Amino acid sequence: MKIRDFDKIDRVINTGQVTSLNFEIENKDELLAQARQEAIQKAKAKARKIAQEAGISLGKLVNIDVSENYPRYEMAKVSAPEEQAAQIQPGENEIKVYVSLSYEIK
Image (tube, rainbow, N blue to C red):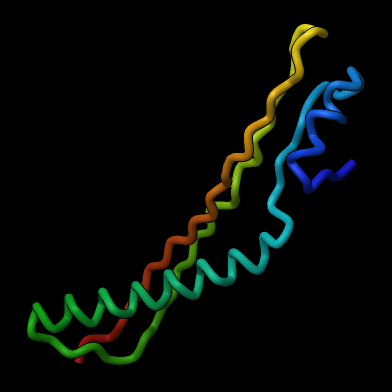
């Protein structure tokens, strides 16, 4: 069962039929693409700055290495005494992309 409204989670959990929860990112591919694009732009800017500081010119980009850190989905077991409502707090998952660029030097 998917529940997107955190205000409704307590009602479902407190039925006593839920033993664990999975939190997932629905638009993971879009977010990975965005993070990858940002990482590449930052890596290019950093390469230009380092080349300038070293007094060299960058040639053609010859290699791109991308490492994507897929989010680890949080799993939580819910247990609470029957007289107490279970409390679920929204959290966050991070998507990280690491990029290494290799250039020819002019």
